[in-house]
Amino acid sequence: MEKRENMNAVRRRKSAHKWVRAAIQIFFFIFFPSVFTSAFSGVKYIFTQLGTGQPVEWTSFLSALVTICLFTIVFGRFFCGYACAFGSLGDALHGLYTIWCRKRKKRPWKMKDKTAAVLPVLRYFILAAIVLLCFAGVYSRLQGSSPWDVFSMLQALRPKAKGYIAGWIILLGLLACMFFSERFFCRFICPMGAVFSLIPVLPVFSLHRDRETCLKECSACSRICPSDIELPQCGTAEVRGDCFQCGKCIDVCPKGNISTGIRRLKGNEIWFAILRAAALAALCVWLGI
Amino acid sequence: MHGLLTRSISLAAIVLTLVFYNSTLDSRAKSEEIAQLKAQAQAQQTENAQEGGGYADGTYSGTGQGFGGPISADVTVQDGKITAIDITSHDGEDGSYFSMAEQLTDDIIAAQSTDVDLISGATFSSTGIRDAVSDALEKAVQ
Image (cartoon, rainbow over all chains, first blue to last red; front, side):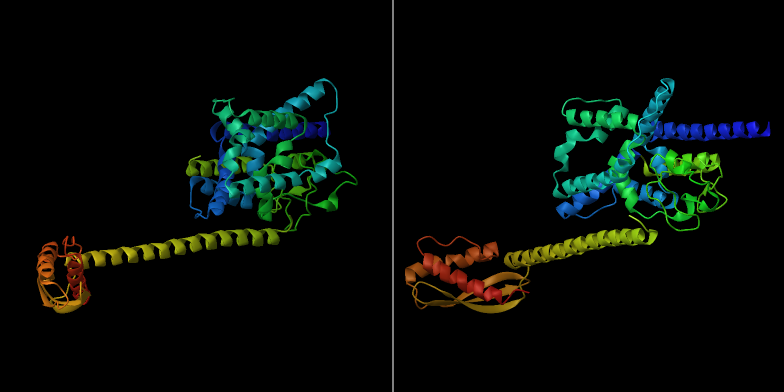
């Protein structure tokens, strides 16, 4: 009896975590949909200015970029996991796919491990390409092929087809990939994610695993992780830059081995999620996004 | 990309580079501004000198090349303005041409500048007078 009650409690808790996260994602999607584009525009701005030999001034894009980066230095890629409109959309799409697969009693398609290990490099190439184009001053010529511009227009409910055909095609392609592969865009394509992976993240709020009490050959955490991460050992200062704090590993671990740099803080507490979301939202309001 | 330390160092390096870049551009812009202001001040000064507002009081002599020889003039400056021009020697000039050219002195005093039209028909003599006055005025600039 007790075991079943425990299991129910666990299931309810996992469910609660999932719904809290979904709610926060929806919140940011509706109220702060352009954080990603503003921050990335900051990156583009820096390189455009460098390319034309002009000073890098404190525009709103630059402030957005710096603020989000500072937030990420402290809290890790919470932004990616909870506030990025693109990521949230991907999660929603993949959620639909999972439900569809379950109904049809089929296993969801999973990317080969080898591919998944190599593809993340693509992000850095895309970042480098965009940055170089900005530096050379020719990025604006590619205006119509940016899927993010198309996405922003969609969100503003002002879709334009003329001149943005390439962008539409790329966007739809990305959405299809996100449908089948969880967080495809975030793991392999997103240049902002590439930027985040390059900045230091303090270990205090990042997830670590205490391997001492792990079950033999369990690896449930790595398997359920959307990014296939193997968490670093507890107590070290090492941080996995691609973890975006979705918290699935924490819920799945049968031994509760996963926690943040602060031992008593597991990392997926509801109050902790809401606290970080509120902080991020406050910053966005302050930035005027 | 591993290592908190590596990343922190790279981030610091990037930030420092940007700050250095900005301050270089800033100091370059400042020195450009200084050069511009200097040029402006210079232009202003020459303007003043020409207008007569920038002349030191006194009498100055100058020489210029006339038709047949040098022409010497004494220029009197009072209250920063040209008040009198005295041609002290004009040996090489033909009488009639010279008397025509002499009108230039009135024009110069009226305009308070040597930037006046030469007397047609007595070009060389007027040039000589004008150059003599300019020469004298160069010594009068404050």
